[in-house]
Image (cartoon, rainbow, N blue to C red; front, side):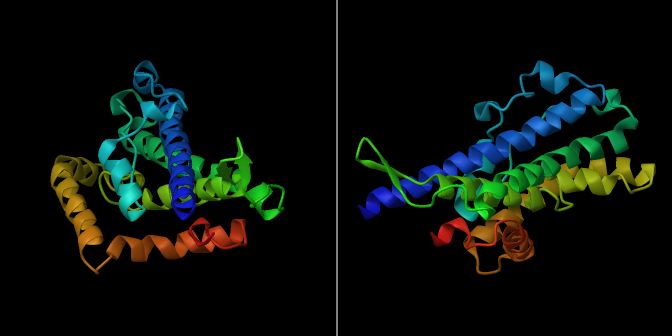
Length: 223
């Protein structure tokens, strides 16, 4: 029975993960399309289908260390209204914003105790808790949204940060993105395999703060 409960917890986590990533990446595609670039729409990314957005490494990292990302949405910055710099910032901001909006909406029935946390059995065999599923959706939306606000390539925060730079520096940084990407993966490895968890120490306190403001109960991994 314990093995079955742990298996259901993993299923709840995966469901929450798929929803969080789908909302995030679809919002990028929607904003890019609104700003005049239909590239993502034509590539089938203007969709809530999770399989259109899953990035193997990003998904693995989210499952392993609780921090991850979806497959990058293709955007032609030259076609964006307001220019590449501001246009890419708006596209970048759309993903975390969609996560926070989703978390806020899904948190309402949890905070008002409108969904049961007790387990219901399907076919008198499979235990399922709708409260736990929604809790994972809220937690992972907050985690994905906040993590992506870090101003570091390839995260959305780097695009938002770049909007405040002089145009000259914007293009200089763009040339060195590949090196920032390597450094980013080094940080991920440090996060996973050493006790010096820099990213988690930055991200988890605001996640917990927002969680308690929205839901006001123990996070889903305490159930």
